[in-house]
Amino acid sequence: MKYSKASSIFALIVGMMMLFMWVFFIVAGLVPEFETRPAEIILHLIAELTTAAVLITAGLITLKGFAYGKWLYPFSIGMLMYTLIVSPGYYLQSGDYTFVAMFAVLFILSIMFLSIHLKSMKAGGNES
Image 1 (cartoon, rainbow, N blue to C red):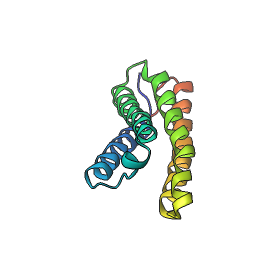
Image 2 (cartoon, rainbow, N blue to C red):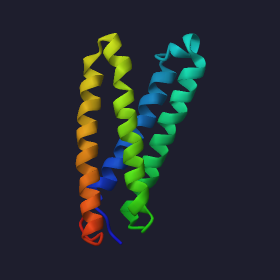
Image 3 (cartoon, rainbow, N blue to C red):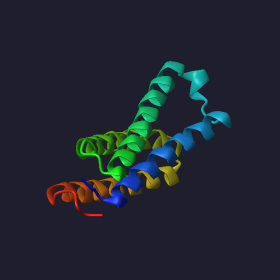
Image 4 (cartoon, one colour):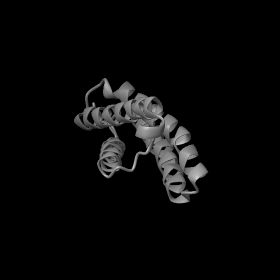
């Protein structure tokens, strides 16, 4: 069964970007919450890294056309959409509107690619 390649690639790219972003922030020492709110940031990182891993897995599975990607992909995008709603609050409070705008664009793209995936499922998974 084939699903939308664009949707699969979107999930892969966003998942990899999330991993790279957090690795960069941690290595560069840009996560002061490790000192001020360690439990909160560790749980946040677990949620973010789990989301990234599920996005990457769903992207690969749907790209390869496995049937269970039919349900894993929407689940992964749901995880992403949750984090795209919650995460901007931190940046709003610090006045960093560039990240807020990035999250908004990713949220819109998430809706768009989820719609493409669901349309692909409805059409029998033949859209690419």
